Image (tube, rainbow, N blue to C red; front, side):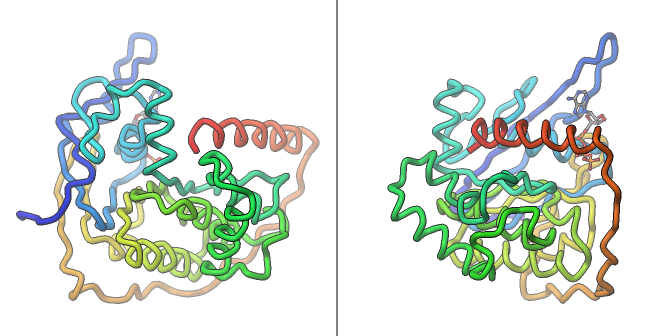
Length: 277
Ligand SMILES: Nc1ncnc2c1ncn2[C@@H]1O[C@H](COP(=O)(O)OP(=O)(O)OP(=O)(O)O)[C@@H](O)[C@H]1O
């Protein structure tokens, strides 16, 4: 189908090969597509189909083997590391399945983080972060740390952090993968509403067919290849009919090893934030 508007992302004949000793894994196999400004695009496929690899290539987190990825007219894989980091700060936001919040920081401080990297002044960045947290319904949770919030609330902090600097494009990798059905709906609606209001482009990876109903474009991936591109007529989209039974929270004992591993993960998260944001 012909589409009008500004092409914000062009993926051209992209391949990604991983080498594991003598084994060669073709994770993304000659993929081409375009995403337009303001589109909500969903990369849909089963586990191991190559969705996350493709998203990471589009976000410049992974290096491609061949092909081109053009974002806002710029070939991102030709940029220097510094140039790419600046480009990400300016144009891109990220939402992760495991939230990737910094546990030692409050919700407010987590949301302020991209603005710190953008060198926004403290007073303005606090105001922006407060407004963003209020808009995702967390006006009363600003001083809470991630562990003092539910999974859905943590992901709302993750969304506030991804959108606070008003990036043109937000990449989301299984953003509701750890949430129950009711919270998934809330989180998806928040992402969709904020993006529509500001004409932001969303690229979301999921294996969950029911989430594709939020998208304008669904790219079906199988074995690293595009099977089909569906451009959805928004008027025809109907509400998900999924069961709303909230899951029972899991009670789990934590061993000393698990606690140490969590602390190490925390360090990794901070490092990752600094690299990505
Ligand atoms: N760093 C890596 N090194 C080697 N192989 C990898 C690496 N990352 C991914 N792969 C392989 O590439 C293929 C695609 O993986 P990818 O994570 O992109 O799939 P996915 O569709 O996102 O799966 P899931 O939904 O389970 O996350 C898989 O066969 C995977 O084993």
